[in-house]
Image (cartoon, rainbow, N blue to C red; front, top):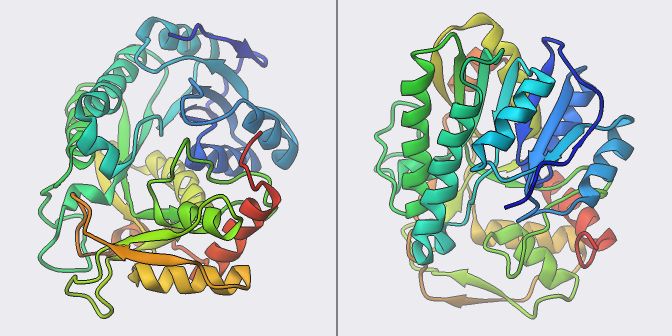
Length: 349
């Protein structure tokens, strides 16, 4: 297990935020938006699914660095030392594993990291100055819903180990925060895509991508021969799965809005973060081809275990409670994702 490696000055401001998974795809974009909004950030990550160079690019884009400690969130003692040193007032918890297919193959790994790691973090901030907690959850907790769009009252019925670990983590957070002077937001977000408009940071999955957009863009840049579409016989307009794709910068902005909203609540609430619009796999593949300037080579294969047919969000609560709404279009998402992939054909090197 990695030992903590710290940099930056001690931070005791009420605007100091501990971000787990800070160098990951969503975490890195959120760090930039937090810094731009005047927060100080202490990040932690173990680099299992990210690279240390991301820290330099965050500093480059934000104009100032984050403090950082290299550690595994399951190392409670290391986390506790970071919390004691920097005294954050808030936590945004991204660190975790997120691939549906991988969770089916390796459920033990997902329970260890997603549930065990979350419990470790909650233990580490016990009796600390943390009064606000934001959790990176997922729409996969809804499973294959009978009706769409899904709102926060839609019955939960996850159909993959990944979804079950997210739901369990949500329930654990709610139970534990109810015993503390700490409010929370459990953000169930949908399908993050895109990248920072500069193309300097973006999604760089380890190995073969599990998600649609990074795979499509790796095909476009020549790293993959063809994209596999998992099934075209679903009960959808074109037979392919329909999802709610949201630009990662919109999602990052949603986390900033969540922190501000927690100033006005003393409870733990669930909020969907999405666009409220469903796009099929073929819609995304075609939009990606338009952004790239050439069609994305693809082929249809059999369905994948754990995939629901149609899932997209009702965003009414996010707009009312957070004062937040996604602004960027599918064309924006594809343009920015291509800017990242074309400038970094082999990802972070």
